Image (cartoon, rainbow, N blue to C red):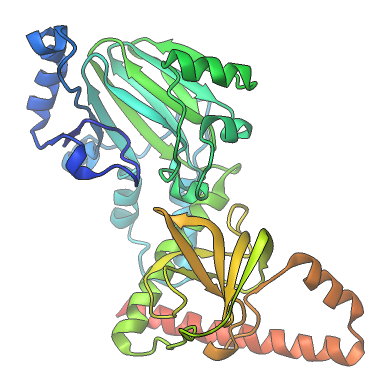
Amino acid sequence: MCKQRAPLFHEDQTSDTLMAECTLREAMEYARTAHTSDAAERGEAAVLYMNGWDVFEAMPHLWHESMDKLPGSTTPLTLPEWRRLHATIGSGETDEEVLTKKARGLCKLFVGPVGAITRIHQDNSNAHAWLCNIRGRKLYVLCRPSDSDKVAPNRAASKAHGTVYGSRLDPLDPAMQRRAREGGLELFATVLEPGQTILAPDGWWHYAVSLTPTITLMNNFWDGANLFGLHDMFYDNLSRVVDANNRESGKAPRVAAAEDAPVTTHDPPVLYRVVHAPWVYVRSEPSTVAPVLGVLRPQSKAHCVVAIGLQKDGWLRTAEPFDKGVHGWMLAHGGAVGLAKLLMVPEKALQEAQSMNADERRRLTEQMQLQQQQQQQQQRELQQQLVR
């Protein structure tokens, strides 16, 4: 599939974005000759880009287990960590072919003509990425993670959903480039020649444009510095499986905010910390049967604290859109679904801990032990579901 815009962001309307389904041979022929057409010379032709083709899914015989490694430079832990995570939940998904397929899916091919652009973005799930120019020359522009507010003002979500940002910088637009520099944004640019590779670490914004017809191989990976992103992705996927299984089995609890319940607005927003493990669901509506937008986890580096802008009948709503422009809703307390507190204001949690007497501490310990037993029971049921 060749697309006019890459990557596609949630605000891109597919009806406004030109796409063309084609073979690899056709994509390469287009990339080689597109810039020579009369329309291209007049500047009237749309530039299409085969962005992110699963080459090793289509041709698995080309895959090798060392494909994701850059000798002397990176030490990916993606596959061994996936293996460990699946083993901890007893999913039975430790078959090497299944895990190898996951690894293959992280390595993709890009084929583009002159002028093909990869818009500035951060990769999902805190992943690192290396990009190797197999053929052609490509200009890359990178920006530090700490400059995110200058690169993409009014950001709407976390890096787990790396394509939900709005008002992004176009590094080749003179006016935007000037304003960015005046605002203190530092741009890092280089031109990759055939055979050269660039590394975009976790959180680094990156942009690319083909100076000649190009073929690029890209691989996302995780190592000791960003494994939390892999964990977030794993548990996000797992939580959706659990939610779907509970719905099918009729075990999903039905708890929803009353339509006429009063609403409390927080301006400025109030920060809440996740205190329930393994995760807290974030849903599109204040209801336990509403679609899942994602999860928050106390062990997560990127998803353990959330800004709340509104409360309604025991439900908390995110101050900013959580995913694809949609605000997320979470239960603050899990009593209605057989759990304890799910989210708390950090300062309140600390104050409660400091003011507890011996009896209160004992009750809290018993409550935590009960919660742990409930979680273990959920884990056993989950294992049975996954095995079936």
